[in-house]
Length: 599
Ligand code: C2O
Image (cartoon, rainbow, N blue to C red; front, side, top):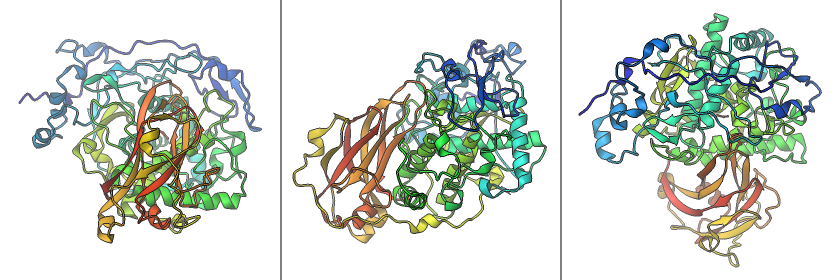
């Protein structure tokens, strides 16, 4: 069997062309960073943020877009000619991944599609299909090669809730961000280059290694949790390095607890580097976050919002996380189209919190409300630390199962480390926090007691509605109700313990340049407003804008065993599903109920 040895650590390449950019960036003048937002579209500079604290102004940029970080590029002309890893037989390349891939696995998966995903970082392309036609330009500084990296921490440090840390800690974290912002733009550890790393992996900057025609996207699939864990890991190590303090850890925005349900004060102090002026001015403290935000502020009392959030957390972490696919997201194999489907937490509250923080007066709801720009707001890293903490809770508190598929475990990503060098890491090495050298404190989880209740038990409103097959596929332009048959009803306790009843909405087609939201109800005849504390409100589909027009076809998984019990519908032959469009244009391909092994 051919055995191509990839990890000789140098992948000679043609460096990405250096293009200068002419966009006028927007900065918050109060920010101590020397420059900010280097790649902001010009249109933004004509708009004023409503934020009182905002003193945004345009600054002329004179940096280069894609400076080469690596002086060895010119000397790295390959002995093997114009080799880029993607030109090798995909299977051989993967066999070369440090022996990661067992031959038996290949044997059982004959198809070349059944392979782990990795990025081809040497063929980055910029996102050009933006709303205003100005390219996003987020390819990071080019590199000549990369090393494989396996974490092996000797100490474990605990990340702390952002709202409960000391004044000294805040000063320290802010100085780390200042240092990152002050690094040269040719340094991939520069704060805005780090934001670009997120952008390039979300706006399909990289093709998949071995599949030049297939783009890589790390949202809307089972790559979401591990990719973002690694991204924060290196961001944290850059902070440790710049602070010369190994004990430093990132804070997490504990939005799942009532004590943490507003923007933590460290991010709202315009004197600190942790501040970003481009946020929704209506959502600054003391406004309580809406974890299921769909673009409209609910006219409710803050205490009710806290209650709603508690129910949303229960639904997403308990009800909707009962199978590995529903929690992590759907499998993405090498050669597949991106976006097989987001997991429960990525969908809600992850996307909703992004959207809630972003400034709707910006062209694309920048910064947090659009994936290409989200990493430019320092709150991103605290938001994602809490998303990452949900995975920790899933493993360590709920004791649920991780994915065991080798295609997940052997998928890999490339990041810049604290020495500004590119390193390749695997999903497998992200699953053990002790090896990564950090953990989370075991805090009380109030949402464990927030199980949604039925508004009315035993309602069976299916009689006059059409069957799903009669209305699908369809453009979702107005609320629509239809009947979905259940392949099995009245399952025994044992059957229910083994397999989850999953309602899967398939062939969801839209342009992921923009945010798209629709609500999903079960056996409900009043769908004017979704209420997370009512079991009839099954949840929503929420796809956060990318800022770069890309056609997407995806799916969304809803676990319904527990919901149907609560609704008193367990013995019904069918259920009534209602879809209510809230934002964006979307087509639905189909819907089905299947039974999936539990986690
Ligand atoms: Cu990669 Cu919160 O997004």
